[in-house]
Length: 190
Image (cartoon, rainbow, N blue to C red; front, side, top):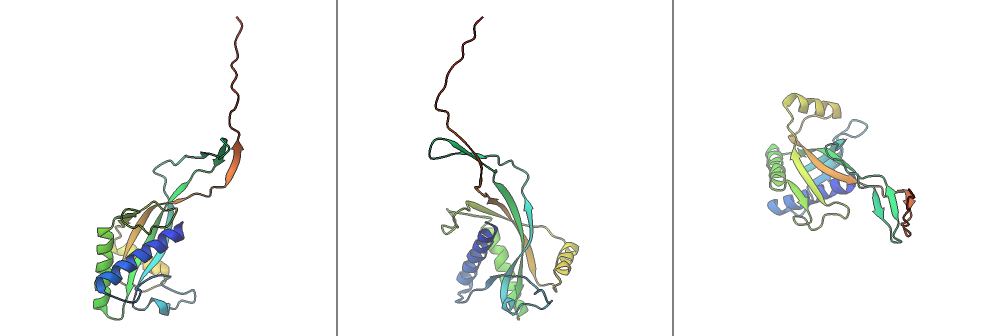
């Protein structure tokens, strides 16, 4: 689900940028900022890059629906679904600094206009995703500098967003419970 949610976010953002700037080519790329050998990926040139920087389990709500009814009337016990928040860096890598600023402004505008995506706002949302919420992360100068240093990259204009509540459900059955078919009452003799 993380891949689906991240790819869908990139696809929708790309459609938006192509529309507002009347472009034919894709401008959004899901990629690392630095290759394992320390070089900058050539694919990142003149693109808006989305890079996954953190995954955290959502713990503010309990999601304990762990029993579901089977077709024969019995019940199957499964592990409860878990929800995760995905932090991603959106950075702009253009030869022309003016283009960089134009695209980072458009990215911020997109997420400000679309704080969430669901089937009513984005009919192409992948199966298994019901709603994606986006929230701008407040990162100060030192935190941003530490983030870019940790990635081994040189700073580019960027913002960090949190994609909330990506649900992961394995649907692996732990055990089955048969349906109750006979109820008998016991009477107590006094």
